Length: 228
Image (cartoon, rainbow, N blue to C red):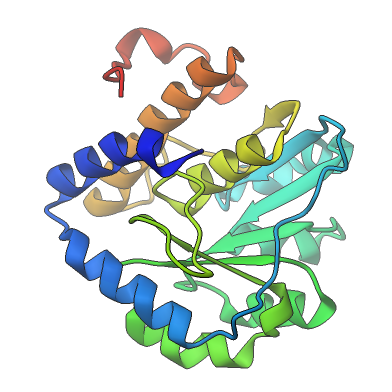
């Protein structure tokens, strides 16, 4: 997704959560300083349109392992990468802001698996602590703000929906969503708000793709997304 298309949605997120764009930009610039001029690239689909499993880290992921195994490509949001590997499912890309399981990010990057590391307004300290420990050739740096230098923006807000936007940008044919729980009763109010926004953004994405995501079945009547 081009930034001009993403920016109106980004501005809506900033307004909804009271975030400051300047904070995201500072984190973006800090991430860039931690990396060389040559960094990693996300998986390439080689002109095909594969089925991509965008794995979430909810407890139900263990019940959805078959969905991930049947997919051509597996993108894992944060902790989902750890759980998939524990169950013998290969991960082709990890999408994370490093707030959970940096050990998995270290292991994947050491193996040469792309790790999409996201910078935002309140994780600059985590970036400084973890990014130097990653293999830079496997790091794909991203931001919610305007991309600059080596730091890219593929769209999306949470680790999970950013993984979906990334897969879309790369040319995925079909998106599947193992391990997602949009109504997870175990999360706190702030996480619930973020899941609500992830849901809205995925609804926007499926309309852009002219595809229907199974995890939104039975929910679309209550969703309303501006024509960003």
